[in-house]
Length: 277
Image (tube, rainbow, N blue to C red; front, side, top):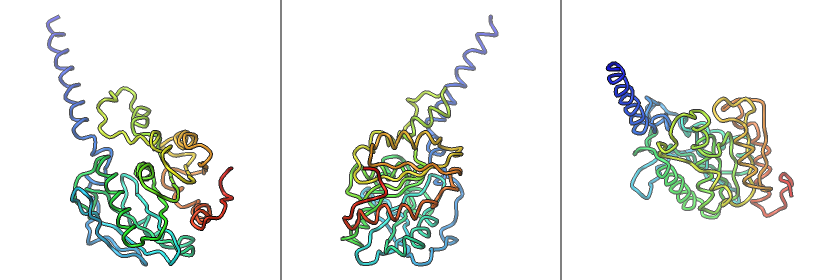
């Protein structure tokens, strides 16, 4: 009995300490790219056809961005990377191939706290980063319509922005319904009240406008395919969900031709044959 009196308080104390540490340091897990060693800014190459720009947020942070101006009459892909990634791959992707041939420009940013940008990441902070990036696009290309793109965490940023700002549509790769749902599926014993950032795309996607193209890997080990189908169902007939063989990263860009064709008619006001009526 005396042993139990020692062990139980000790176990309880360890549990409370572990939960406290999780509460305090959870953003290291949610936004790993901001807390790892990353790449030194001097080591990062600016993709051909783009230029490095600085994006100033309303709360005073300065973000590293990569910009390519659109051709006259073209749109701009405002793209948001995943939580463990950087903007360079997306900037290179949307500056070449079908996007370049279609006259699109692009802006890709590094979130606050990520290499090249100041500050510390949070849900409210990343949404402000997206708003600041959109303001810069509106200033640099005032007549260009904006397509919002995001991968993984970036898809949640794009959806949050779409709920607040005018846009052509949403191009989402490997999105999740909400961070709360995803964490609950992966760690069902963790108290949901500990989560500081919830990223409720399920509550926001209904406030977006225009067509939505969702691409997801059938073998995604990070975000189950069911999230794409659920999110698409919440958006209604505006959304098309494409499930592809592949994982969380290998599906990136595999439907760019379809995406460019889907959103190009919207830009010119023509009927959109790619989405159901």
